[in-house]
Length: 354
Ligand code: FES
Picture 1: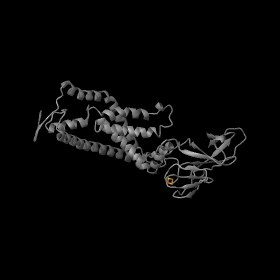
Picture 2: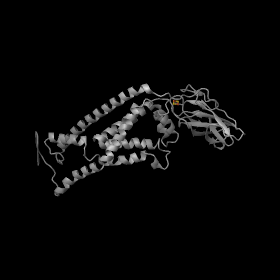
Picture 3: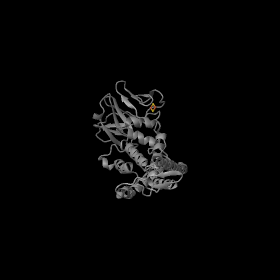
């Protein structure tokens, strides 16, 4: 029985086997010690990843190949959740900010031991979203890091940090002491236990909020300092032309082979990945021997356009823009500018992107 301040005496559950009551916290602590190296690694890695994004002057750029918009566009071409990615593309800055902040907060939470289960869940969710987009084309799957991060987050989702070197555990112990309860004791007084939990939650939340704000300030300062060093990024060239006729010279033209003639039957469109940027693009053969190539990136807000064979148009699923397949010009808004064109050269049975 433990005395409490200002309350009637509080009963402590005393198990018949006293070893049992000591074993549970000890086992938790042991668990926390065993997974501590993994916790440090994950925490530091996610803090680093979040800060890297927040301080990268190109990350929120709409044109930089390393920007989040471009990465989403490239991932959308092969992702099984392309319909979600396409909607995220519409709000790429917000999505990028969410990813960067999510990584920063999850890393901080796990490293210092605040809401470790939620931090583990956040890391699992972030890694799963990358696994289904950026890493989806990686074979075998273990060459991509995201499945490993998903697996590494599971112990923290299931067991938390075990209370080892954990700020939340320290807060709880202090709250228990303030309530006149021996830290680690199991209480049968539910109102008191609820009160301890509530106070622990509030104080942990305050610390988590403080850490988040500190991380944001560091990211904002880094971003401001780096914006002066933005690298020039390639912009679509208005002078690119797009038609090509097969040559019979037998000499391979310069450029990158992106398809074969057989991939693009007359009247169809073949999707390929533009090698310089990794973004999706289409090759068409409107009539035998004539090839056209366009970027699949909608010029409105960057969603991936689809080829509508029945109507012979490119249609954007996001806001309904349509593009003429003969010129790439928009035939329906909100897009105002044509799809980017590429030069395709046919040589023998192969198609080359200039
Ligand atoms: S992104 Fe808006 S219409 Fe394509």
